[in-house]
Image 1 (tube, rainbow, N blue to C red):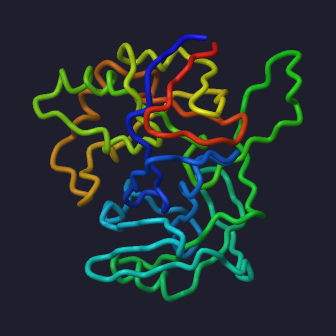
Image 2 (tube, helix red, strand yellow; image 1 turned 90 degrees about the horizontal axis):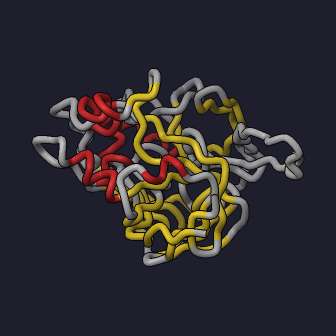
Length: 273
């Protein structure tokens, strides 16, 4: 076991590809941080919408609290109730996965459609949704019946970013960028840039994480995460010059939690393997 640093930031992204919400503590479920990517905006065919094709999603403000999900669009605010009757279920698509999701009341979909300029619907990940994470099974692994789940995140339930890795990238940029460009759940202060690429098992607070996967990046990291504007190809252009692996450009690592628990600001990171 090796001490690797401490947690500096915690963030959830209640609606996939909309604004993030900083938190002081994070409850980790087996599907990822509580409330993270719990909602998603889909088109008329149930296909997921992101900033890749709809940059204006970056202007949608969100906040999860005891009342439910607050959505801010322009000068309007709406509160999606904490619970959903689950009586209106539709099929939705996230990359190659097609699952069930609960449709939220039409009022919220109509408001989002008007703001974003496209017909869309707001859906919630439900107990019956069951989107499983592909994972590698080692020979002799006793967890053959393990079926890790992820909500609407792209690949795995949680993303981890290292401030030293950002410092390394910024040292190569004419204009530095902030960590918010990379939309991470956990930001930690590490010992060296990109050391996180080598870890295989990790403990943060109460939670052990396994099955890491490097996080490949797209043009979303070129976008201002408040406005959706993308004035330059940076930092993706520079990152592509030295962080390319085949056809992917990596920054950060995605993880699967082995158990539930809580993580707080200042929690230590311990490398187990």
